[in-house]
Image 1 (cartoon, rainbow, N blue to C red):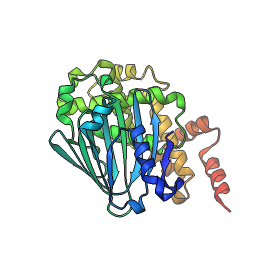
Image 2: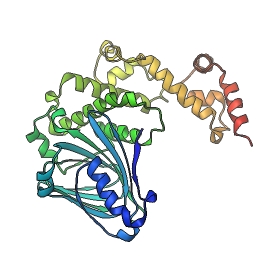
Image 3: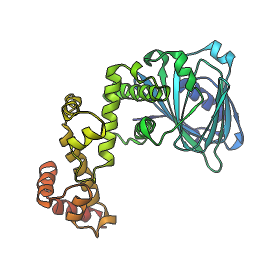
Image 4: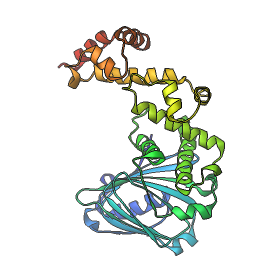
Length: 326
């Protein structure tokens, strides 16, 4: 869903730096750049607009960038930004604090305050994903949010992991999202960002009920994906894990296309279908693959698979492998 905005491979060397400055200015904010090895400059930028947010995925070499007071006076879209580091190391300084980020770390900054960034790509290139959100869309007082500027936020656990996974899926999506999904995805991103910041501020009660509900649904969906192999995964177990009643759990999913049980079954079937077509699992029986993803009864699995895909698991495997052979 991300569209290519910039790639140095499309330009002659003498035009690359100026074009990079222009691409970053339009997709993020105007900054002043200093490139370590300008003669070998290689970078790329992809972006998508989600109405409530804007997402930019970039690769770049070691560099320094600064957003100065002069640039802010000239133009300030009044945005909050959350950056996910994917490769390389970055130092980001703002309001007297400095965050040191490695792969998997998150950091928040604001476009209305000067900041400096230093990226060390080591060998090869660094990469990151940045989501920018209009300040007015975040239902928390700016004075509170400013406490977290240039503060590292963990991206491997809790709400940080959900936000990092969401950004990662957006950047690796191969076409499953449609343009019409943009507004919904933007709302989800804002809700995840709000929930993450509120958690670290201890201001969860300030988050609107709808945002809290959306964030809870995403946490539940992530929990389901992580525990698909558990044959005891059930609405009752999910509700207990998230300290809600089963009735509340079902009410949360009323606006979705599937019930909780249907979501579990659909995700398990998708994992089984993937493994059945994977040559690396040729030594696994159909029964073993079904059990691996939580289907304790082979007959029930076979019926569910045929109902979903119109073919038995064994026939599906044979058909896939016949296409794989030269």
